[in-house]
Image (cartoon, rainbow, N blue to C red):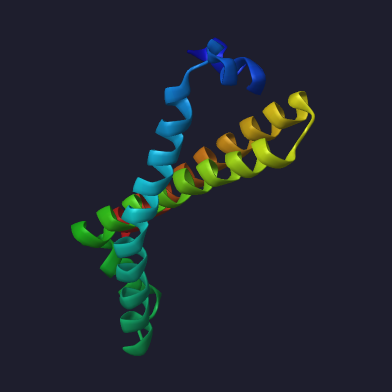
Length: 131
């Protein structure tokens, strides 16, 4: 499977690569987009309500300390960074012609998405337990 990712687009197009790989990527991007819709709506409504009630940092920390907001925030972070990495990969594959640079940018993008998601999850967990 890893070897099929290293093949040229022509090699994949003539049947030497996995046609399923592109479909999986497409579905993952659509599913994460679908998951993000209610999560983003929930987040925006929650932040507007908190801001409208004059919530300060301790009130926000207490809110994050409840299980449902903490879990939904973690799901929002995971879906956001996974969806972003998928989308950026498509842009890089479409617009970067130099194969080595393309591969390097995809690796950096995926590592950055993982790092940012882990940092966000750490922040939510820390706030929820100390909040």
